[in-house]
Image (cartoon, rainbow over all chains, first blue to last red):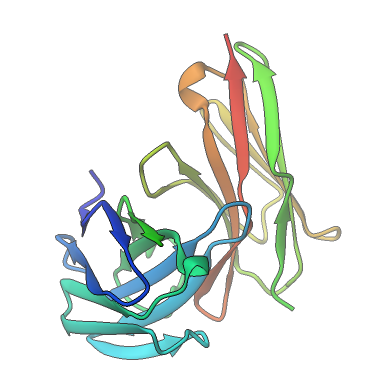
Length: 117
Length: 109
């Protein structure tokens, strides 16, 4: 248990569906992150929120829409996804952003395995 | 540019040493990290090294840093079946972590 939980753990959706991924951290951190993990590719940083404000958007398509209502919760809203969006979506949190080195490390959740049909 | 590269797969026998290698591109990285991902789980920080060090030892783990060649390695002594996982190298750059694609370590009994 890392203190970061994600739901659902698995999700199968059609290209026309709308769904949301949820992340919650119980560590008192102020920064939260969404990453995309695809097979045999580097982990891709998608979004960063620091004190509920979005500070990074790494050219992510608009069919992915993040929301951070407070420092403990982070959502990723999905709509009209493509099959190539199938991947493991990981949430992480850290004390603050930008990272200034240990002990300001990132803690990861277990991920949501997303399959787009 | 931002590029961290690792070989994709390593297979060793239980009890042997494992060495996982990584190359990175940005010499201004302050810290370099090794993360471990077990099946069905997220990434967990295993160890890290400050860029002004060339070696760090932590129980069975030894991290070697060659800053001139921008090469990082993780040595696991007496590898156990529980060490089977994906290992990610990462550099810190402008406050973000840049990860490699991960090395899958398979430990055969």
